[in-house]
Amino acid sequence: MLKKLFGFGKEEKVVKIDQEEIVAPLEGKLVKIEDVPDPTFAQKMMGDGFAIEPTEGLVTSPINGEIVQVFPTKHAIGIKSEGGMEILIHIGLETVSMKGEGFTTFIKEGDKVKVGDRLVEFSLDLVKEKAASTVTPVIITNGDIVSELIKENVTDVNRGTTKVLQVKLK
Image 1: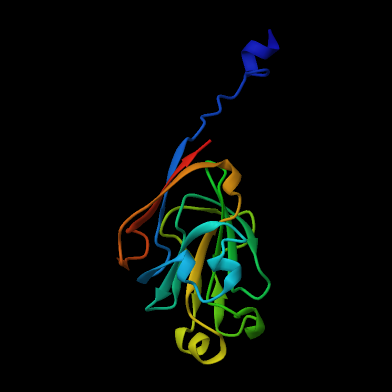
Image 2: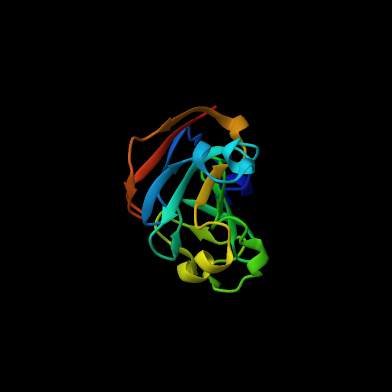
């Protein structure tokens, strides 16, 4: 009786998401992952994805999901999508050595985010001066849950709106 009255014992319905899209988290030019000037990313050692040569220093969420990691140096963010994809946004190359200088985060681990929410602002000029490159990889780090990755044929991308990847999940 109590179970019926108060809803105890109800099974929650879990909706399986079988497809998601990833939009550009930055303004700029799309770079094929194979063309990133760093073998860890170019050889897809961390996973498949894309990169952007940014024209401004603002990173927004490319998906709806939850922040699972904010690196102490603020140069990289991990997000888990509603469908379970784990996405790494790595601002620039060799930026860990900047120790957070020029980076401001607007999120923390556990925060829920929607497409277009502000994640990080950074000084593009400082990254140009102190890092190996401003190219920013966006990687799906748990590719084992992906059944198909469809890369859009785009060059110029707008943060929060340009669809870059269509991802079919297993």
